[in-house]
Length: 272
Image (cartoon, rainbow, N blue to C red):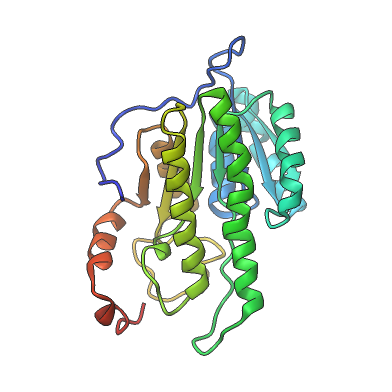
């Protein structure tokens, strides 16, 4: 069930609770960090003093990101660790996860921001594109969500954030499999939330609307468009609250509540 816009009033600390670790030492992994919301999240976390691992396929972009964070990280006491990794290569995840946790000295926050949405023409049914989206958007989330959930369960603290989409709330004609991956991601995150409910672990589903990234570049008719930096600030605010599901920006909650109530025989006539 989706939360209301005011469901996140209670503060939820991201500070580590591991014995012997200073309370102000924070460790995070951001998947899909080379651009868009992922890069904005890394910049904000580094500026706040986090030791943050930026993970993505494009190593050159990660190095540029790290360099852009150098001044703010030095001022805050944070740092950026970069790791080139394709989240679709699920067999690599256990080794990458373990090595990053060792390098960071622990783990308190994981944000899965990786995702692809190739252009799909109205008359196109391309299995290769569809399987690629399943591999990154869903299998990648699961491959990283499972070790994160188990680590936080044993630690009895931690925050896992999955960046989904408003596209997962209904079956849209324009991007059938993209929406499917996000709907499945929502169910997976809800299942983890329920499974970890007695372990002190916070699992948050983020559902952005339109964000000015490479994914939305060239699209017409976008409204409530926000920058990656605005999205990142709202995501971190939600991560520090008791929110379970957060629409970004918040006004999408009202719109999607209406859209979810439209009967299928009417919804299929809408060009969305």
